Image (cartoon, rainbow, N blue to C red):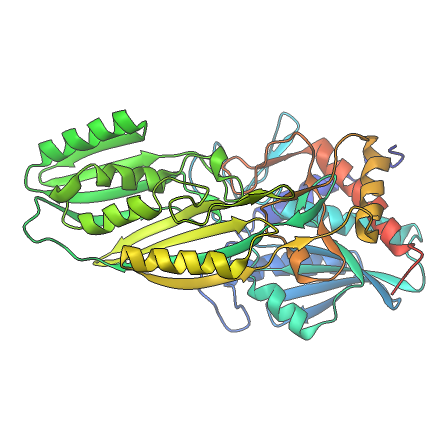
Amino acid sequence: MADYDFSHIEERLVGDLCDIIAVPTVNNGDPKPGMPFGEDVAAGFDWVRAKAAEFDFDVTEFDGYALQVDIGTGEHVVGVLCHVDVVPAGDGWESNPFEGVVKDGKLFGRGTVDDKGPLVCALYAAKHLRDNGMIPDDSRIRIVVGGDEEVGWEDIKYYTEHAEAPEISFAADGMFPLIFGEKGLIDFDYVWKLERDGASQVRLVLFEGGVARNSVPTNARFELVAAHPENAVRMLEGAARSLGVEAQVSCDGERVEAVVQGKGAHAMFPERGVNAVTGAMALLEALGEDLDCHAFVAAFARRVGGDYNGGLLGCACADEASGPLTLNVGKLAVEGDAVTAALDIRYPISADFETILRVVREAAEDMGCALKMAEHLGPIYFKRDDEVVVLLEKAYRDVTGDMESEPFTVGAATFARTMRNTVAFGPIFPGQVEMSHLPNEFIAIEDLDKCTEIYIRALSNLLTRENKG
């Protein structure tokens, strides 16, 4: 059970987390020299660099892609994998997402859970071990901090190409007790060139929805130009009622606008959200052949629609270890006659990637669009008696006294996939709502303390394990 007293550092933990939350580390796709993920992510690296210097840790730079923070000098390396970048804030916040706000024992802000809170916990855990002489002379702790985890993983790719991986480690970007298996991940785009019917009564001029392929979109909006706008409004409102889509429809002259409201969720749990993009597409489908690009809308409805298990695509599958395949339409945008839909699939550990890819490609051919692959990450799976699982599970149970919650598999994609002997471990506790990527993301102050203590125990277990190397 717990025997560390964090009362003397809790204020510093909270203050430091507020400070880094205030740096809006979203990869905005605007690289600069030495800043491959943009100025904001680079500013997040600056914060980590300064904090490491304050703690007298050693820092190695990896050309703006990642930082390596070393504590100790021994040859045996125990790792903690984190990232400083966050997903865009999105809508629905009750406070400034980039200003840490403490209320009712909780700290609100983008990144409190994913992944700035765990990063701060890891830094303080390493400091505690160093200050108390708990790092063996033959070992060191290495905290690896990436800047592109939420987009393309170019950070960890660059790092692993230029550095030697730790012998054993955990990704501080998951759940407790621990995650010993992760589904495979396929990120891809479907891209259409719209074929428009010039004789149609309604023209689609704009569609925008979603902020990231790995989040269920909370908002979507489209604009139409209609020969009879009142009729279009009536049809859209009727469709919204019958389909249960939350939408506001209005018109100004010949222009009709629909704003659809959804409910956010992480892409690994699409069933927990309400997808505003697929809801908006369902409203457009209700216009039928009155819409100039009805062929595109009908194709989308036939093969993608609002299905989040891949059934319409033809790739639905499941296994006992990791559950069903999930599908998320994270973004969709119409620019002129070009449409890009960004999708995310999490497939079961036992499923075959090539089979799923073939089905995804066949669906593209059927819909008359192009398939553009963005990313593929194969699944990972550890046994319950593997060393890293045993040592981390013991740390969790020793601190919490929880002997009932069991390690599990998830649809999340963490840096654990990129290195040997690595699993995802915290900061979310059993029974808690997954707040990553959601508005009003928060971490409880007591959980911030508890997570730090668990990381101290975990790192100590990994540092002193019998079979090093």
